[in-house]
Length: 385
Image (cartoon, rainbow, N blue to C red):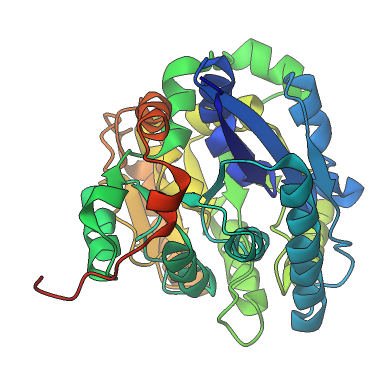
């Protein structure tokens, strides 16, 4: 039997980290064949050119779709989205996959699924049904649900939302977050090995900061990042602050500039475009707190027991573990939340997002899918039916 060709699209370091073990398992499965389209910030030097990480990990890249990420205005992002639509469409025509596999809610992923729609190519979508009310990601994610034919939800409440959007029950699966597979399967670095990998020493206390644009805010989150930096001035003390790169969304430049200027004037601060998954998770495990508005503060940090300060409403709607402290995007509230997080004991690893065995579940689901025409013949399920 010819293996089913599964074409995975990755647009940046965040989704690649979540997809890594799933891609490994697809590639190792005789009944499946992995194809890989790399796009977005992976191909941009100013975002760390993380395509080199993918190559170093040994994955064969079947297509590269550059988006020209030079303009973070809404018009510039729309232009990049159009490039993703055209480039992924060309890759689909050449590679002839049996199914497109995507994760999350970013605009380049929405464009990829739109290309699949035009090619009558079934789509499997990871993390549909999640809620993040503070960003356009919410609308993109729900649109991806309607463009998709197989739904791989990270938790049961999300799966229920997908069903309420009219999706047939047999298409909806609770797989958990594949990002947690890293915590079970990837050997993390101890303190000395991490210091060697980072090229600088850790502090007595360490804070890991990741803050992305708030795409529904009028200023893209610029005021919120100023509040965060002022709160760190009040609370960080002598702690070493590790700041990771900003997503390629509208409003990125203002946030990246503010963080860069703050890091330049403060000692014991390290700024990085991309740490890579192993260094990032190893640092997250050692850190005293994770601070910002990234989904990793709700997914991976609690599973590692590290307290999280979740700022604003970018992640509002996601289930949160007991180690997550929510803070309004105002200096005093963020400072109070940081103090609370630093005072709380480390968590026990309990998380609503699964057990770190998602990749294996998803592979079995992919192997058991019906034929292409059955997948494409979606029926809308009326409420109460």
